[in-house]
Image (tube, rainbow, N blue to C red; front, side):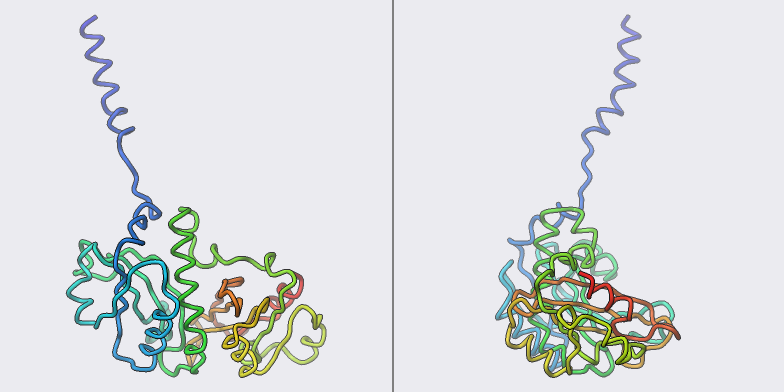
Length: 280
């Protein structure tokens, strides 16, 4: 009998040890976010830094924040006491050099001093072309900062949101019913001609000059979704184009997609996307 009990204990010990093991999910790792200081890293690019600094001062509400230099970031990135909001360049596998500038929120911690890849990425959103920005990023920066904040809040509630990314957390077109959708002419793919645009119901999708669309964002137009696309300046095969529809008033993200640039699919909203948006 004693041997049987010893055998049972030996069998049950691994199971008990396994049941006590805890898996730390991304949602759990972000639980400390509201109490930690977010360091907003200024890169030295006065135009981008200025727009980020203004947007953070006017919009950031979900955690304490401080501005810091790249030198301070290098000294602090290995500490778990900080999150970092910073610009990074994104380069895809077939690109010769980085084509996009992105806004990324990451968490410092052990090993981060050795490689940025070791940092926990909370969310990353494209800002503009890395080589020749259009200037629209200044108008849209407050919205991009709010999209980052909204993603963090969703990620602290659900692992699905934490791992799913911006496409998962966008409101979806179903939630855009009754809202005006305005797309800048510069955000439309070259394959979209006047005949195709005429076939779209005007009460569902409007294509207006870029300046008019940006004005709607600046005004914070209510119940209005406006377009914003980000693509490398000299986009070639293998690069990506990111497309967004953002509520000008609330800065909610209603549409977030990307497609690979190819001979048959250049930058901008493709015809099938415009048709899908018009069917909402």
